[in-house]
Image (cartoon, rainbow, N blue to C red; front, top):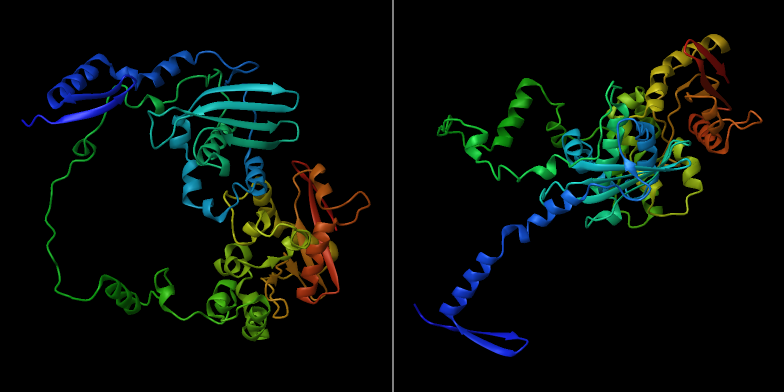
Length: 452
């Protein structure tokens, strides 16, 4: 063995040792330092974490704040950290899943100060379960039923709304929906996820799934690509409307009206030239065809496609008063949404047809369905009221309580400015002189009152 020499700088000056002596020193150092010196600190920290912080109490199933789906939706929609189109998809959905949050959240504590409730917890990072747990904090107003903030204090992405904050908020929501039990469950405990690695260190792939190996034998000498074979087969059996084949067929006249397609085919270099190009493509017949093709509104994929990138009547007031170029409104117009329909939205869709029938009886008129109305004069705008007839355009609102009615109608029984803007734009696109604005108010479980 070649006896090389290494040099080190220390407080006493330059120290030179041989290879053999260096190996001996390294072995002695490894022997004298136990593994717990580096990796045991996390377990020691967990062992010391037995007392809550000042002012906090241990969280239990009977003292957590109630977080419903409407509160979550309102918070995500109004917080710019969570409305970005970059986080609206799969990653955000994975953060809310039960399999992660319920096993990662631990040491939950609660503090109340008047109407304000603060919930603090530790959440185990998914990518490294032996790493120090991150501190997450949720602050809400229990009287107004609003979420004020949800923050993760430790991870690298905490300044922009990280997945740990989403996971913790989803965990609180699930606890609010848990059925009541006779026993009280305490959440001041170590998370299940952080316990991984303390007993069984790893698992082999062959232990996860055992299957005999089979060699693949070619079944055909066809040299065509797999994609070509699938396309030819779809054409042969007449299945030309599936998701794959839509990329290989020319768009219809109505589909060409989407903002995405117009931007792709336009060679305009400024907004004014683009609008002029839209006017050429958006003929009166094409706009009429779009209205007919989208009569089912929310249940029609084309309705969503044509609304994408357009200022619809429901966003007219917000667009007119918006001073932020790249904010929540812009993200919403471009399709940024994260959660399923809220209880209020689902209620409105379920009751809409019933309300329209009742309005037909009260006003003695016949109401027809209405699709998305487009106009070449205003190509980046659109309107789709809930119904129409020869005289009226009709908009239905179903607030969940009399208190919520104030959003739509002022104390003087006048439609508020936001919804008046929606009504006016709908009348302009439908070329109507009159509008019927209908409110359904749920008084009791079996009572309903209509105002128009």
